[in-house]
Amino acid sequence: MNSETLIDLIRHGEPVGGRMIRGQSRDHPLSTLGWQQMRAAVGDAPPWDQIISSPMARCREFACDYAGRHGLPLAIDPELREIGMGDWEGHRPEDIALAEPDAFAAFQEDPLANRPPGGEPLLPFQERVWDAYARQLASYPGRHLLIVCHGGVSRAIVGHVLGAAPRSWYWIQIEYAGLTRIHHRHYGASIDYVNARRLR
Image (cartoon, rainbow, N blue to C red):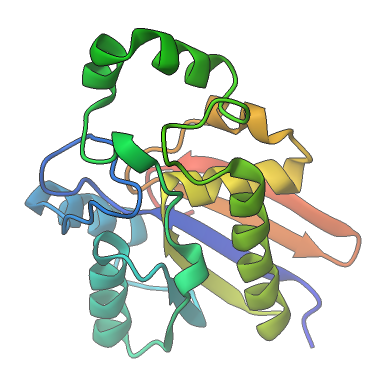
């Protein structure tokens, strides 16, 4: 059996409404551009054995379509949903920066200690996401997986692999339809690339 497991993370494409803080309560479907971004990133010759997706529509609808078109098994993992951003969900970052400048500046300086009002704490979020990721890794040893997820989820996984403190996750920019590859070998995990625009 192959002892190496490849896991590709892909953030969803642009949703209807463009950039905003969506979190969990704002779940817009992909825009026409978002579908184009996703299809361009993954191509028509999938190398994956299994597709896994967040339950949120901006991820799930593409995952269902892609898995169905290529005859790939699909699993929906509810623990891969995006981090909750509380009262800021549904607003654009620049609007929050104008309306709540002190709170927004504090969040940018230390997002671990200064969550949005009603937002999900970072440490429980890290535990939730990493437990889900580790469960999928253990379920498909030696396979090649595609996880369709979110910017926050991708940052949490990459941050965990790198051993980075949660307050530094927001320094990792995850673009729409950006691909990240994590290579699990017998001696541990390495990150092959982050934010690739097309499958390598």
